[in-house]
Length: 135
Image (tube, rainbow, N blue to C red; front, side, top):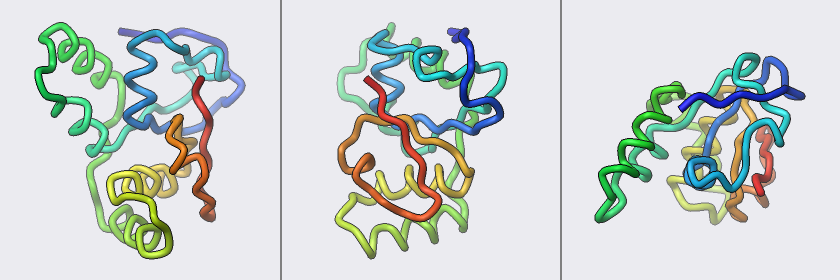
């Protein structure tokens, strides 16, 4: 699946949260409406998001295929020491759950905008953390 559009966020790194991937695949929003042109941005997601997407119980074969196809267009970011340390800092200082801390830390380390509709992440105020609500 390739996504086309016109950009406002030229040159920006973008990280997808789990809900952002699900809603995009369900066509509840599109990237052009957010000002994102995949020809001008780098698209990422955390290994945690990939795990959350693919570990759904009774995942229909077609849905798994769509997820796998979409993930091919993203850079899957593994946990490294910088992300781990940032996630630990966030977790110690907030009530945000560890998987969300890892996703936020991934966004911060990559200097990226996180696409999400998760209230815990949208309400997180952390130096270097940028997020954009998907609707």
